[in-house]
Length: 321
Image (tube, rainbow, N blue to C red):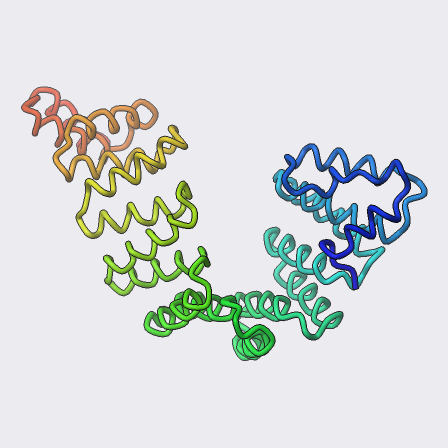
């Protein structure tokens, strides 16, 4: 069984001089540079089959990072034709197939990884997640039990069960599983995010905000976590805090219309009417057909004692309703 991390040294020792290009496998390099280096290695006609498979796998990873899932999948197929029992590559192909909507194919690859290595807990976890997505619940729970047996300190099985219960709106069960995942690994970003969602759905918004804040300690500029926490702050009517998170999003993505609208609403609710007017005015330049934006800006204008301007917005809002 080939594992990329284990076999890299073998690759560098066995490849010909022209193929011994460490840049192909240097994870810290930009994806385009790694793609070019791997392509150079793969063009070596005397490259051994095992080495060639690893180069295909490395280029696939770089292509995937670069957003080219179709070519990444082609490279995994080519590499697995040479090394069909490489479990790491099988799971990588499983993830790509899932991304491209081929859930049955993704499950088949996870099963192939298990057949190649019956002690591979991550493969059971991956197959469980895919089976849950197909409502194969009994088989999925069995896989999760095996994953937990093989890797008792891995938060993954608890996270997957927690996400499953969350989708079923069994919130107490979801919260229990996700708290267990986090107890095993407080640095598990995905479990923190799911726990935040579960708390918010259970109307325990302050606990949700705490979980989202923990996720942001792990990834301080993460847009998904910032958006989730800002929305939770809004539900908690802490509009100033919500505005701060939307500011952080807009500092990274100035043209994010959803964040701009949400900041405008938060500004209006918190009494920051000038900010609200500015945000809604920007949005209305692109979408002057939206009556809600006209109404919101009119409300802010009226509070600023700009009655004539407010009347124009209210009239336009009624005309477009």
